[in-house]
Length: 286
Image (cartoon, rainbow, N blue to C red; front, side, top):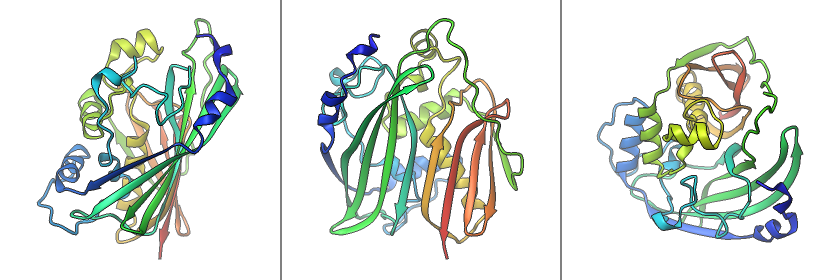
C-alpha cells in the first residue's frame, strides 16, 4: 500500500467517536466460553459472575456481511477510523475492575475512541488507536478497559525478521498450550470475530505474510489470567494489564508462565523458541 495516504489529522477526527451497546446478560455465552476453555459447562443460574475477560463474548456488534472489509472485520470509517494499513492486531490492553457483571443483569458498554497516533516503526509506519470501554449496570460502573489496537503494513519481500525479546526464565508456574484450528474457530465464533487471520490459512500466508493461523491475542490474555487465578484461588483481580510483543500461531506449541511478586502476578506467554509473545500483570484485591 502507499503509506503516504496516512493522514494523521484526518484520522484524528475520529477521536471522541462513541458507540453504546446494551445487553441482557444471558447464560449461553458463558456456558460456551467454559466449554471453549475446556471447563465444565455446568448449569448456570441468574446472579452468576462473568469472569474477567469473558465479557468479550458479550456486547457484540452484528455487522452485516456486506459491510465487512477484505480481512473479515467490520469495514473501518464508522466507529473506528479508516486506517489505510491492512494488518491490525491488539497491541495490548488494561482492565480496571470495581465489580463484575452477572447473568440476568442488563448491562451497557459505552465505547469511546480516545486517541489516534501515527508512529514510525523499524519496518514502516504504524497507527495506534486507543479505545476505552466502560461497562455499567444502571449508573453503576462495574469495570472499564482500554484497548490499544495497532495497524501496520504487510511484510515486504526481503524485510528483516525482528526477533522479540527472550522470555524470562524464572517462572513459578508453566503450562504448555498446543493450539489448533478448532480452538481458534470456536473462539472466533464465540466472540463473533470474522478476522480471517484466525481461520483462513491461505489469507494468512498469501495476504498477510504469516506462517500459520494467528492465535487470538485476547485469548492469550484470557489464558494468562486463568493461569494466575488457578494459582491464587479465592483472590479477586482488580487490575489486569497486558502487552503483545509478537504473534503466536497454530503450527507450534507455546507456554503460559507466571510468578508472584507480593499482590501482583507477573505473567508471560512464550513461543516455541522461548521468545516473548505477551507480557501481563494482574493485581489482586485483598
